[in-house]
Image (tube, rainbow, N blue to C red; front, side, top):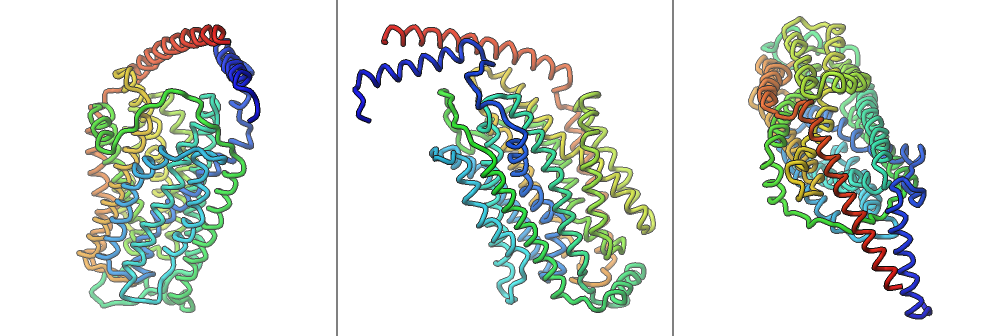
Amino acid sequence: MARGEGEGQYSNASLLHQSAECESVSKISKCEPKGHLSVCSKLCYAIGGAPYQITGCALGFFLQIYLLDVALLDPFYASIILFVGRAWDAITDPTVGFLVSRSPWTRFGRMMPWIALSTPFAVVCYFLIWYVPPIDQGKVIWYLLFYCLFQTLQTCFHVPYSALTMFISSEQKERDSATAYRMTVEVLGTVIGTGIQGQIVGLATAPCIPVGEDLNSTSQVFGLEVNISQPQISLDDTRQAYMIASGVICAIYVLCAITLFCGVKEQKDSSSVRTEPMSFFQGIRLVMGNGPYAKLVMGFLFTSLAFMLLEGNFALFCCYTLGFRDHFQNVLLVVMLSATLTIPFWQWFLTRFGKKTAVFVGTTSVMPFMITMVLLESNLIVTYVISFAAGVSIAAAFLLPWSMLPDVVDDFKVQNPSSQGHEAIFYSFYVFFTKFASGVSLGISTLSLDFAGYVTRGCTQPAEVDITLKVLVSAAPIFLIIIGLIIFVTYPINEKKRQSNRKLLKELLRDQRQNELDSETDSIETDRSVV
């Protein structure tokens, strides 16, 4: 602070000269030791992605049946909660991204404060989603409030976490390696979320209520078996089981956040070039004006809707249509285990045969099993086999969008070399559209059950509900998959186009680096003359 002005200018010029020389001599010079990430840092970073998948799987598979059979909400109100919650979640993504991009740098970084501050409030809201308040009139407001609050707070965690990839290392190779660790942990998170929620809740299945003789006899037999085999379990026991499961998941959420915060050091962005952030509607015009991106998003929008319908209604389908009220949590676990185990296969497949081929094979492979599931007579072993096969296709649906989005971004860069730095817009709007579609699918499916005459906690359901569930897990998803595949026929980026874009981008990057080196050389010469 007390140094002279001349000495300060000399020191700054020397530092600037050393920094410029360090970068201009070699991009792989040891002047950038912070670029390397240890295995421990990569693991800590990857663990931070688990909470999003764990809570997402628990909510996706169990929230609908929880609201209907445990919280005892009318299907109409349950549909409102599910739709508004997912739609609100979709809106918060670009909003939080907008706020995060304008956050000041702190001694903990720019992203880490968002992650640390949102975690305690997020776990409280998540826990209260699975608590049944001792009031009848305000239940809908209760669940809608805490569901929307949790989605907002989780977005405040996940958006900065996703952006953190760019700030954990200056080397692309290290970022790619950390992302691979992250994807592995996130896939395991889906298994953990399904397993914890399903196995704990499965130990205290809510007793069903026998209803009239007008219900189908097959389901009634299963319902009576449940009542006879588990007469000691009350609805309060089931509610307590859901709270225990949510408590365990909340503890894992906090541990993952602490591991991320303590094990990863966020590096300050040293780039001097910054693009002006776009508004929400400017972003929509940019991404939807890009033909390949629009076709990719629309194609995955329909195929994602298909799998979301299957995910959201599969627990009810297992309980009432198939009659496996005591086994549905195990069936769901088989689905997610299958998806986890087959992701490496799909990674190999898309590398060997191309991504567009993988889309057609991966999404169509589940269709025969969807048809078999509703046509064959209820059989537990057959259901497990079909669930495993469905998990194989779900793995493709999980992996392929994130594998194909970079190709679209690369194509945009090739077509618009003067408009760079918009990667986050492409990713955030894909998430926005898929989350909004998820809300629509859950809302419509739950509302359709209401129109069909769904009986809360009934041991059996009317024939109309049985038909509705079959449509929601078979006919409707197949129809949506077909529409999505028709759109994918027009998707222009094949393997040949992708390789061509990569070559053009390398040439573009080489030219940019040459311009940077020329600029740095001029800057060094200027600094020397000043010194």
